[in-house]
Image (cartoon, rainbow, N blue to C red; front, side):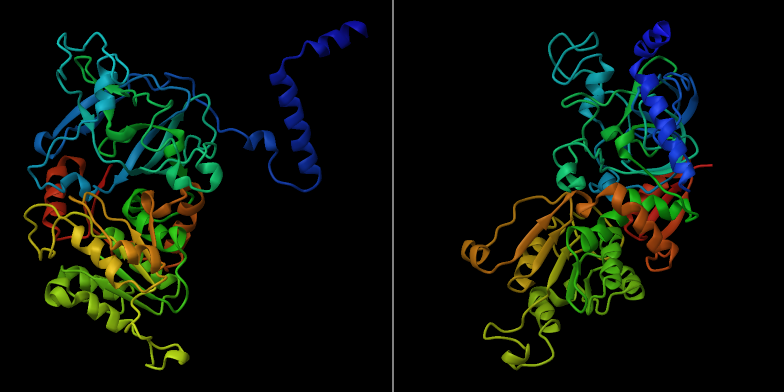
Length: 478
């Protein structure tokens, strides 16, 4: 008996936890519960390096210097997830400077490829402290795919899961996540440790190591990403549609459902009806907005906006300097009687919610151009048109210049200015419910996916995106 007690005392902490989990799981089964908790606690792990040497193809570089190459997978780390890419929607930010844009190069990947930390010098660093040769990078910060292997510490996903991988991480443990701001997760745009580079996950035949911009490379048959960027989804929605949830569609929907909650019957203006704006238009409709006004210069987008939920689609080029007054006239209310809910001494009210989703326009589109390609004018107009006490949500990216507001009005008019990464998206909470909206036919992503392409047709997909003749081209993988 004494020997047995000693043996019990010498049990490892792991053994104690396993026995405890098994006991709880058994109790759950007796009480009519589901699978034992021990089976739900952690996804099956694949030993680090199990996928090492696997060959796959990827598109390297930016629009200007795009190449298609065969790569070999490097050993994965404990919190890494290996994903076979099924679909990726190229982001307009990749072509915002037109087909002659700058290559996609991640400085963190450059440092890691040289064998040095950020700001440090490794064996490959030039003696003079210059930049030296740039590390090849895989672009596009979003995709959908199937998990094929996981590191030893991964819990969120397991092999066989379909995952949406987007530019906004959610760790659930950092300062921001614990305060309900998953869109500001401190892992986003960062790697495993503060200040550490995203490590290269593949190599060329000559041994040159290759990484992904922002740690996510949608233009690759195989990807290695951190667990925090993955969201498992269990659905039959086509992957071409799901791919929009890694970036644009999630941003637009979240802006109207998460960053703010649009009130039923309210007046909503969406400036810009690209992929983000079109998703915001649909979300405003779903939330029960009284009217959804979509301001968009491109006719084909105005037509689609009317189909997907907009009630009025003013052309900013046609309205010119009268745009703000036109919007306020549309939102004047149903009566002139002040005490019956009508307009006051200040004139027409303006919208309750204004969502700016314009951003910067790239060079040489083949469709109608906006009044201000820099994107600054619509940011200013959003402020001018919104009623006192209303809310303005800024989603556009890539604007050039500064925007200013009158100091007294900023202090006294009670307008709320809101911004957030991907429209305030809380990935693990929001993406599954957004997918359900598609399943139920409330959110139409099918109409937004306008063409599909193979990886070797990426240049053509970029051209379509730059021309702005389509809404969302998507690259599909076999």
